[in-house]
Length: 331
Length: 273
Image (cartoon, rainbow over all chains, first blue to last red; front, side, top):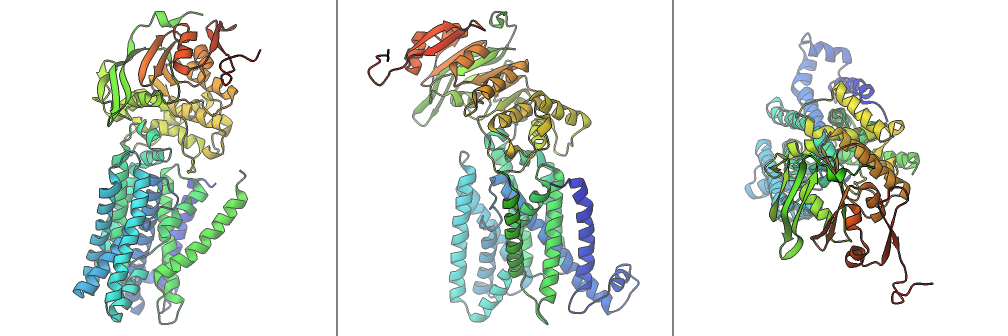
């Protein structure tokens, strides 16, 4: 296990390097020298407009989305004490997809802004149903939430499939593309919402770090420390759905990040400190930056959907980590 | 050995005709007793007698359906949860396993009721945490994963967490079940050495007799006996409440009651000899 004080500078350096790479690498290659010249405002050329109007907002969105999804996963894994918890498991993401499909097929709306609102409403609907069904069952809150989340997830998927089945092939393609995730829609105007939500959530998480850690030892044990467990869990659940909704509504369905990144950080530095929260967010952001870079350069004249890459790279990396953990564990 | 049960100054916790029922099922009925400051109280009773339920009512996890619990003459449900947790620490029977926390992380959780939202650990906090870990004899394992410890060590970590909480009352719900004999004694003696008021439920009656100043005996949700170990642990109560045939002697070391169980239940109570 590595000390957070050692890990932090390393990860911060990685963040800077990854941003530089994300600005430089793409269909039109820009040298690192040009990147720095553009950032300091000296260059006034094509490179500068590519960087400021395309790659910068896009990379920021990727970074914020990766960090936010990783945080959402960390929250859900902590408050449910379930290593498999992530926004997908609770139906938050499928609720968002459902909202998008409804908007596209029923109203014919194809505009990004309205789709974002539809996705946002869809995920809020999912979380509302989840809390209505399982949120106030105090004795078995965690179990009922997990089961209700899985059931809701399937329910929304079924509705989504039904809508797709009825809609025309063009809409199906558009929806398909949306559900696989992309940062191509990033612009400066829409960036403030996820940035604001992610920062707000990070502050809330840091403020509640002790309480969240106490929850790992069980509801009853946490309650004896004076924590209102039900309130904390529902608050944190709302927070993670807000995170997911604000990100999914802009970027589409991006799975596996929320599940995987918290485990990776936990594997290296444990989970007892405030640093682990910050590091989870940063590592999630770095991971997503590289996924986005890969999506832009993997195929000529075409972008690979983000969701495919996160799932493919993510699962392989995760399996390798599990393999080594199995070999390391002594008991 | 001086008997502390005769000269208690004040009452720390007072339970007045407490009752708890879920739907029509009565789990606890009309329970009244008092816990004097500085005493070590043992809670006894067969499985399902309501020991855990009673303790849950006392550490505010369950709100009783009738009666009151007063801590320092104040109704515990009038107190803020956080304030009550500053004074009352709890050690439970077991803790979940699915997390990667170091021993120090777990012990530091005792600071939770004393901290504000963004409050970070001061030097005194760090000293308190390492003092508590030292007190339970786990300094050499402070940086290890909680999961890698044995059952007895885990319970000692939970006692260290309680020490960090700096309580005036420590409630323990069968903290020694599933532990080896050595650790059963060690955990209880450790709790006693803290010098604070302790209320603990016991499975081992002889251990309770050796450790406790006073005992409470629950049966079927009712408080059926209360008093010094010699008053509560009689051949009659053992037969009535626990359904065992036993002989009570004086323990050679602490002179309290020592129970020798007699055997031969299956062939009609006839002993083997």
